[in-house]
Each structure stands twice: as C-alpha cells, then as structure tokens.
Length: 178
Image 1 (cartoon, rainbow, N blue to C red):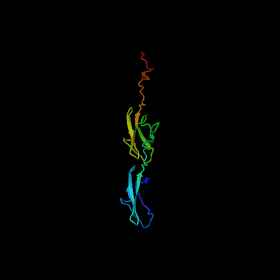
Image 2: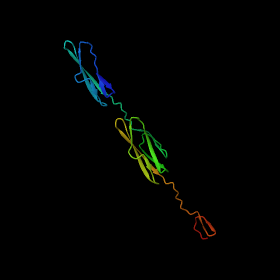
Image 3: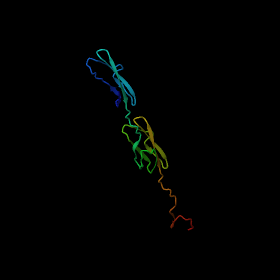
Image 4: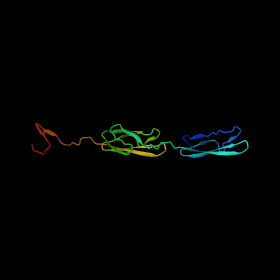
C-alpha cells in the first residue's frame, strides 16, 4: 500500500480481521518523515494456526512547502517605486537626505531579511544600495536591490544680478563700462 501524508510524524494502526489473530509491527508503527521522504511500516498478522501475512505500508510525505521567494511590495518613506515582483533591481532618485525602504513578502511563511541597513542617509549626489533577501519555505532565496541616489537640488546659479556703486545702480550681467 502506498500512502501520501502531509505530517512529519505518522502512526499506522492495523485492524485484524480475526480477533484471535496476532498483530505485530516488526519495525514499529510510528515514523518521522522529512519533506519528500518515504519510509515503510510493516504490519504482520499471524493467524491462530501460525500462518501469517505481512503488509507493507509505504508512506511518502509530500513537500507542501512553498517555493515562493518573492516580494509583494517595496515602499519608500520618501519617494515612490514602480514595483514588479519579478524585477530584482531598482534605481531611484530622491531629493531627501534620508530614505527608509520597507518590503512585504509575498508568502507569509517566507523569511525576509535586510542585508544592509534599510534606512539610509544621503549627501547630495550620493548613492547607496539597500539589499533585501527573501527565502522561501523550501530554502531558495532571491535578492532585491534598491539603489537610491540623492539628486542635488541646490541652485547652481552663480550669476551676479546686479550691484550698486555709490549712487549708481547697475543691472545685468554683461561686461560694460559705466
């Protein structure tokens, strides 16, 4: 007999047809099974006259764990991200000096881990990467990378609008004699 089970610990109990028969489990009637593992429990039934039959119950534990190592979403405290769970690398520009990256795993039983600090502080023009690792129940992993660059929004206008000499008001930025 072949039986698929989902539990890690299985006990098999036989019921004899004749109350006078003897029921034995030569190798025990309880087994512990890892995911995907198969083990056999033997049941031996011996009749009053000494004849016997042995039944092999082959148990296979299905691997019902999820292989989902994806994210449901990534959000930023300052800025936005066009998220797609199959895309692993993102480049984001921000005007803020600090950004917190938050992630939500797609499968509640997966493990989410920030491989870097998820709150970063940026100077003008600086880039930093936040790495997020998601590990499925089966142990497969994927890594998402969010590169955040603080754009320099400071003015670069170094042009003189005008100046005053004593009582003469001069405007413009052309070189002239007054």
